[in-house]
Length: 113
Length: 113
Image (cartoon, rainbow over all chains, first blue to last red; front, side, top):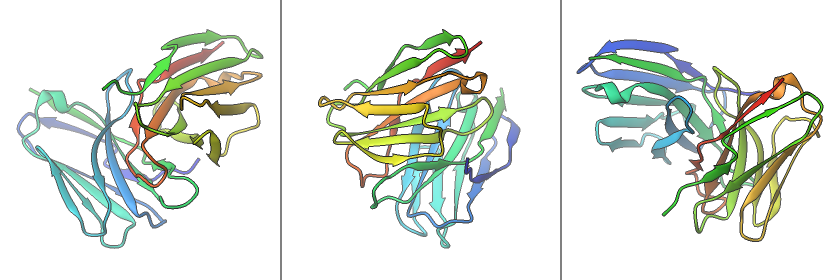
C-alpha cells in the first residue's frame, strides 16, 4: 500500500537534545497530521495542520505544513525520556467522499537519560 | 469522555477461520475508519464508514468487510484468514467526514497461526 517517505528512519539521542524529522509525498495533501505510537498502543494525535505554510505548536512540539503541500516537518525541543516512541506523519485529502489517512513509514525515537 | 474503544484486545485464530473485530467511536463522532498495521509499518487504510454508509475502501481483498450500526459503532469482518492477516487492527473515529482529525483506539492484535 501507499506510504509516505519519512526520515530519518530512527534517531538515538541524549535527553535535552532537539529532534527534527520530516515527511515527503509525491502527492498534494490539504491536511497533515502527526501521531506518536508507543508499543502495544494505537497512534495518539499530536498536531494537525490545515494550511500550506502553517506552523503549529503543542508544548515542546512544533510542526509545519510545507509550502508545496507535499511535505511536513516535526520538531521536538529539549527531548525527555517519555518522548520515546514511533512518530508517524499522515497526509489527508479531505472534503471528498473520504478523509482517509495515508501514513508515513515512521521515525523511531530513542532518548537516553 | 471515553476515547475510541476496541474489542477484543488480542485474538489468536487459525488459517481459514473468520474473525469479527468491534469498535465504538468517541461519543458524538459519526465516522469510523479501519486500518491494518503490520509490524514495522505505518497503518494502511481498509474502510471508512459515515452515517452507516461505506465512504471509502482501501486495497484489500473481498475477504474484508465492515459495517456501521445506528449507534455509530462498527464491526470489521475478515473471512478465510491467511497468515498474512496477522497485524494490529486499528479503529479511528472522527466527528464528521470533512474533519481532518482522526482519533485512534488501542487496536486489536490478531495472530493467525
